[in-house]
Length: 81
Image: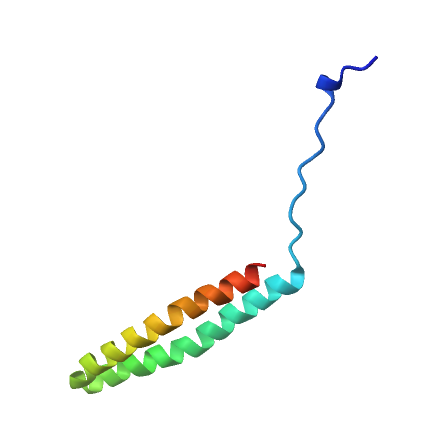
């Protein structure tokens, strides 16, 4: 008779990650960088040449950030499903 307590438990199952999903995330991150770098560079140049625009641009950036933050969170939650 074999002792059931000494039997090895089955190996834990690892969640399978879809290669397409990983590729989609990488492409999304690369596109984000490609889009955000020129915009950031343009804003730095604009603020350097016209310092009086610092307050309006900072205000617009804050509003855009407040709007985009929940949208990005929702997008990440949908992609993780």
